[in-house]
Amino acid sequence: QSALTQPPSASGSPGQSVTISCTGTSSDVGGYNYVSWYQQHPGKAPKLKIYDVSKRPSGVPDRFSGSKSGNTASLTVSGLQAEDEADYYCSSYAGGNNLVVFGGGTKLTVL
Amino acid sequence: EVQLVESGGGLVQPGRSLRVSCAASGFTFDDYTMHWVRQAPGKGLEWVSGISWNSGRIGYADSVKGRFTISRDNAKNSLYLQMNSLRAEDTALYYCAKGLPGYGSGWTAFDIWGQGTVVTVSS
Image (tube, rainbow over all chains, first blue to last red; front, side, top):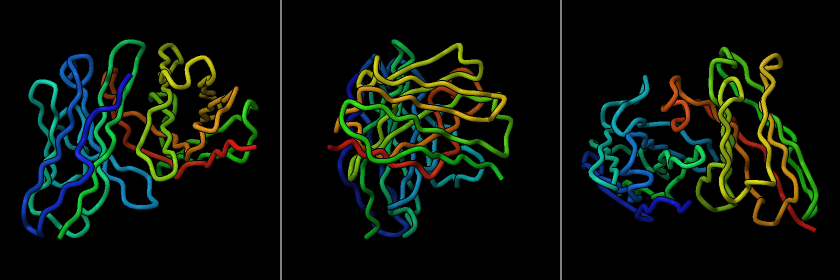
């Protein structure tokens, strides 16, 4: 049960787009369409932004989008805003004994 | 208002036990899968355990399997995590989280989170 791999940091200017990757294996990301993405501001609980690879919960703006290719999932944040600066985590179903695995997190900085 | 409120955290010595609880309100508790997710100080999120609506499906992270037990009381709208043989590396903020509807999404996507309860394992 290994953590998914995310880049430790990403950045972009207001209005630009940024993509964060999440790499796993065929036993987790590549094997199931159950990848989720969470946003966490300092001192706050995480918030769900994307589930089932590319679905947005009600209330999440369409600036947030998700995709997957092979063993790598991606979160794209378009039209960057200052409030998007936060830590982002991916997670995936990992089969086996009903396992769920998270990525190590990516700190997104809005320049 | 949909809400999850964790309680029961505290300072505990290595090798001892602790039970944390999560009180749910504002939604039909027994319709949803529930989970515990922890975050060590300055670190990332780690899924700990999950339990289906009827306790028929349960899962644990390898790091806690055999030491932690998840349970729920639907009559009391409450989720529990019994933690035994605690180690220093179990020190973290423990979040209670609600799964989305559905068998797959409910196990892997968490749409409501509490504010967490802090567990510190130290002598």
